[in-house]
Length: 322
Ligand code: ACO
Image (cartoon, rainbow, N blue to C red; front, side, top):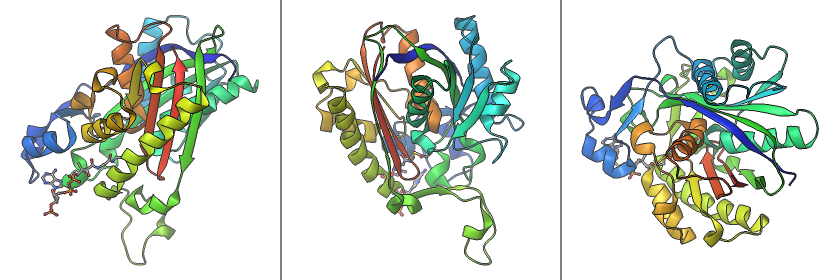
């Protein structure tokens, strides 16, 4: 691949912390159940009047605080989200308008929790193909708005947040090296949010809430993390021993542990922060990446592997020289 990579990043998580104990107040669940099955201790929920574009805008504002000139020359905005403000306009267009990028191309990528990795590939392709010179890539979600908060099977898993990155040409030897993307609608019924009325059984009320078969998704996730991660490494001519950091989609610590076991990769080389944010879908990888960058774990020239999976069912893996 041509040398195209990430040159700036920023993140946002809403202030409102929702702990497992908070769910005990209104659901038949317990901190012990949630933590032992998922590894999650708490997550952040957006305020009632805050939507996905707000998560994205705040992440972009954080990016500008860290890298003051980063938005200069941005000619495309891509937002990965499964919980957009509206079917249209795109959340990307709403974000662009609020961060001083009116006029830039703007569209969303819909690949659920795989969205961030898919959108990295789209952004890389826009730059490689000459359609854009500099892409603002956002992964943002307000999962709390599309999850039924009375369903203990899903309410406890998800959180809200956003991440923003600049994708552009980088010196040779750096940047994205490979992408492996896929989807298989055979598992579509295992994870979905319906919002088009004609898909509903006749007489059913439209309820745009996330529905999930947890066990099916779990088995799928462990399998595709292994397969797509290996395929991405192979495509880039890498093996597991070359990987400095695995940054996996943060859905469940047991899924990550199983994937690490399959790779023969130590959990010490894996970035995990789902204990504090839960599953923020397309925002998990940016939130984890930024945390490991901020605390100095991720350093210049290191080999990263990012893997995600989600609704579709879909998957995506990429290797990146940081
Ligand atoms: N508290 C207490 N009990 C619960 C809760 C809860 N919050 N949720 C479910 N239970 C009960 C169930 O009702 C079930 O009871 P039953 O046996 O009497 O029917 C029992 O606990 C066991 O449920 P399982 O679903 O078998 O539990 P499992 O060990 O599979 O864990 C979990 C469930 C955590 C959801 C797990 O399957 C999982 O993490 N799956 C992957 C989900 C995922 O990653 N989804 C996101 C994909 S990314 C995207 O695109 C959005």
